[in-house]
Length: 217
Image (cartoon, rainbow, N blue to C red):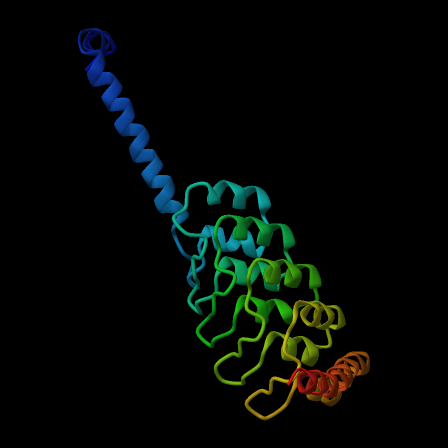
């Protein structure tokens, strides 16, 4: 069809032209959505990679047109798990605001809070706990908690943030070790002292609680 006949067709049938444009736009939008869902060889989507690299601009754009922000890779890691591990606070906030699961776990049972505790960024731990991350979950094989992991890795501020949030200091892993045991074993003396102080405080309050209970009887 030449240009003259094309114009004549539009003038005679304007609705056909409008419908055609709508179909073209819809097709392009579907192509863009499909492209956003493509994965690399490790199962990582564009959203996942944007979160991993703290590409905030792209992350904001992608989050507008997705069904879920929990697009998992081949190991069942979510974008939030990766951004939290990589200490990307702004990216983590955006994902949580978009509905990312703060208690998501990977194949091995590691939670978002656990992987974040292994990186030295207390602000992200505080964000996660404020948004409902469960403090005392244990991963499947080793039985580590977020507190154990932070103590083992020597992240003092992470340990402080987790204790402030109410983490259970007495939980043991599959070998029977507590966060305090791991801090001693790995030579993290400042953390060991903090944990010891917390343990002593707990012990000192126990007799008082018992006495108070007895007085109420």
